Length: 180
Image (cartoon, rainbow, N blue to C red; front, side, top):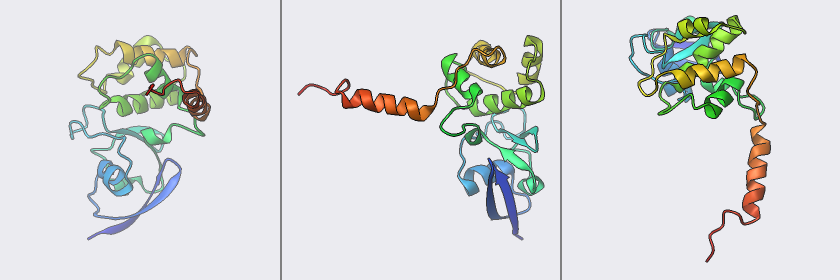
């Protein structure tokens, strides 16, 4: 029997009719349309489906959506604000903390949860915290380096709208136009 469930995701309220055994992963991806959270192992060990619920890092593939009523849910889509990437998102771009991108949302969300609870972790604390997020493409060094860049204040977050405006201006000058 379906239930009416209100979920607060990235600061927005969503009203959804769902079965009581609906997993948060499927509510986010299929019912709300936020596909940044990925399904990896489906047993809670890879970290690809990581989201923050009520300030805690959780595996959305194991979490019932109805259990999240009344709690703030943060997904990868909720990190950028006012045209600016979150510093972790910017660092993963600048320092190459991703390759195929399947694990990247979970890696960034896990790193955010760490920095929310400990803004100045040691290298060992980062390695320990991030050990629950698997990546089959990298040796983890670039992921670690991306997180350390944020901890050390090396990341400059640019307003993406200003960047788009600058790129549009360059294009309007004919820089990218092919000659006929």
